[in-house]
Image (tube, rainbow, N blue to C red):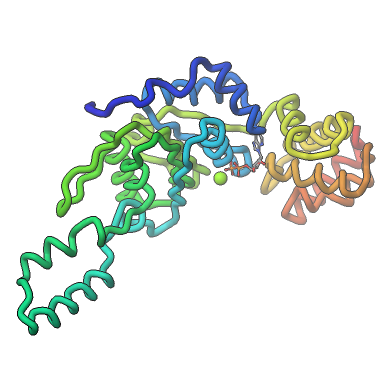
Length: 301
Ligand SMILES: Nc1ncnc2c1ncn2[C@@H]1O[C@H](COP(=O)(O)OP(=O)(O)O)[C@@H](O)[C@H]1O
Ligand SMILES: [Mg+2]
């Protein structure tokens, strides 16, 4: 590959990644920090997969914040195509240009070939996130969020760009990356991604954090929460996650719950208080009923 690494590397060690992330309030572990470190060294994208609300999107954002790099985000959705992911020509502006030319011609100005060169030039190009990331003179963090939502053809396009970090625009030529962006693709696993895309990426499975890490997340993200309350909260959440539910509480819901309890002025939570606020944590009535039953049996310890 002809792309230069610039600057050589972003991180000195796995520990530096972990500390850096902590510095921007993202609590990682060896596994997470290790993959980010390797992605940088190897110039490979990271495919982050796991349940909703486990910090996949936040990892990319936090990495950008920690390095001071610009974050460029491509939000995926069904129907996302090349024109919205890569680039398209500004059709309206081109039409206006052609019309202006016609008026000019009547007044004796230049011909068609001149106009064709003109309307397929930089001024008429609408740059979308992938091309923007490739063209950026400074190293950027590129987040391709919820990639499992796009169709297979668009996935192939992404793979092509991520394989050689270059984009070919027939009318303008090939654009090569000045420096390899640090790329994060996230997936909620609504469908299997192609083998080829997986092969191209480093794989990171983000599951619910351990008790200790989730407690640290709560302490970091929720102002005024006491150590004792944070501890109780993550224990209750863990016991609820062990139940058979439609939708398990995510880290973001743990944080919301902690914020609510702090707002209510609580420093200690009993089973009744937990039950009364379960709707912050769970979004299905049947899940709330199951969790309430569990809390009655085991209490909020
Ligand atoms: N490891 C973590 N450290 C700090 N905050 C976290 C962490 N994981 C999740 N969060 C919190 O949870 C929220 C939801 O995470 P998000 O990245 O949006 O989830 P996902 O993209 O996996 O659905 C974040 O905004 C952040 O507040
Ligand atoms: Mg997300």
